[in-house]
Structures are given as C-alpha cells and as structure tokens.
Length: 207
Image (cartoon, rainbow, N blue to C red; front, side, top):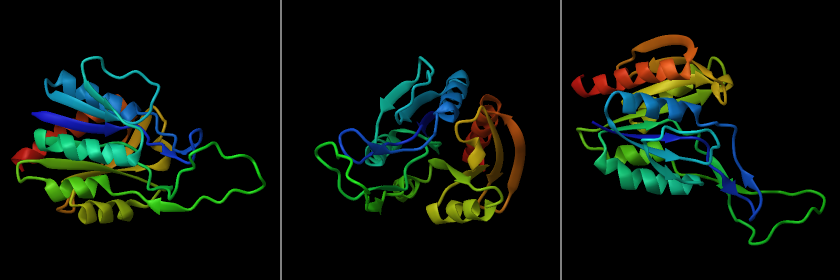
C-alpha cells in the first residue's frame, strides 16, 4: 500500500512579503503520516508551510501555494493507492501579485479568484484501484455541506470536522460515506483519530 497525504496550509502571495494564509498547523497530517508509517505503508507527505516537526522517515514534498500542491498531487497520485487530502488549501488567491512590496497608502483592495479544487482534479484521474479521502472543515452543524462535497468531488470518504479543530490538538469528527453512512467518532486526539481514519480508509479497498 502506498499512501499520499496532503497537510498544512497554503500561502497565496499578495506581494513578495505578504500572503493570504490560514491557521492550519499540519498536526493532522503529521499524525496521519506517523500512523501510516507505523502500519508499514510507503508514505509520501505533500506539505504546505508549517513549523511543527514531521515524522523523520516520511518522504516529504514541500510546497507553498495551492497551485504547487495541485501540481504535486497530480504528479504523485498515479504512483499511490490512497490519497488523503488533509491540507487546508486556500479557496481563493489574489488575482494578481505585486512584483514589489506594497506601501501603506490608506486602503488596499485585493481582487481574488478561486483556486482549483485539488480533490476533484485527483478524482478525474483516479483509477478503479485507487481511493480518495477528503476533509470538510465547516462551521458547527454544517454537516450537509460535507455530504455535498463528498458527492460533488467524487470522494470515497469524507471527514466532517468543525472549524474549532484547526490548529487544535484534538478533533471532533464524523466519517461520511457515499452510501449514506455517518460514523460519529466524537472528540479524540489527532493521533488516535489518525489510526482510526487510516483503518477505515484501507477498508475501502475491500468494500
């Protein structure tokens, strides 16, 4: 089994100094990579800019922007069995990037455009022998949005978790399947959750 995991935030540049980012710490990705390695799987981690340590034995590909993460996923996915999209990829990026640092002159308006949906792009190239697990970070109670994402992106499993999970040591989650099953796991450490999610994801191959 070869497992590909995305983790951490992306940074979408405004100018050479500033960027649009988010508070993702990469803890979930580190926990998943550790669980995968302990299970004996070949593991590749595509990682946005984080400062926390990652498992030493993981094959690591560092990226910064959503576009770079997309390129890395589409390049690596054909050589892996399972893709787990745990990264907090930016939904928008500045439409144009200033070549020099912007000065402070009153107000600043930044026009943004949508980034490409990495999970959906991976699904379009997915073979019958591959599986994709996604994440849906939502406001509390917005579990229907996770269900919609599951079907719209063509995922085999999606993790619904509330916004408070980001940059936290624990995760309160539901696992949602295409057949309508909803497994509520409750709150637990990200390390404990990673073991469960990996077990459920591997089981998708025998479903």
